[in-house]
Length: 305
Image (cartoon, rainbow, N blue to C red):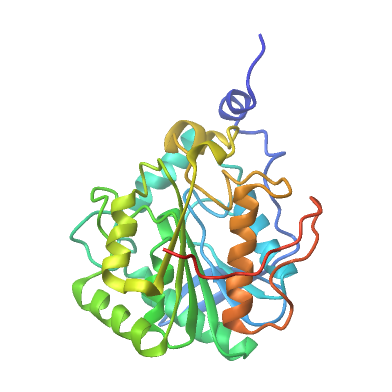
């Protein structure tokens, strides 16, 4: 019987050949306010805190971390859920998502306010800034952690938030997963310090809808640069978790990225790298230069609304 790649991966969970050993990252234990978490660190230059998407630090998330490293950043990638480096299979990934939704560290549903884990992430940003120097720290959130990049802006060291396809709160398409007090404080900080917030989503994403981006714009005004990609540009053969559980084009720079020169998702990746380079003043140019697909990164510029 002929099976698809996804079927084979789901029915043979012992096949770990698609997992990423992440042996080019340094595995550290970082303590913030008495709480220990594993953080994978690589690269040099200004720091960027890259947060994983559901169901964890997948090979695609690690790949994005390597692109950040190649672009001249020190990458701090905390383990927040799931199995580090694991290929996203449907059953295992769904189990991770269920556990995260009831965890005390996260506020997955409307009315819960800001997730408590954000306080720990702000502490990680302070540590990263102290270790790496520079004008400040970038924060990149993905999916379940998408909004955390904005909530982290209450830490003064965070000066370049990137909010990718934020999915929380799961039960409110127009919600921001921020408590009212934090939302007001974030808006005030963004206005006071002239921060810009870069964000991405796919057009028909059911987990991150246009209503959510509209809520960001209502909160932040022109400081929010929300960019939308056509749904048909997403990778049509993502890992099983994204194919069977997510069920739509969702992860712009990871699972649904198409690594081909000039592709819209690659351009989005390069715009993020250029945004971070401009805000963190790396002096390295707008992106990682020619990669294995031969593409060069464009300069970042605010989207004309």
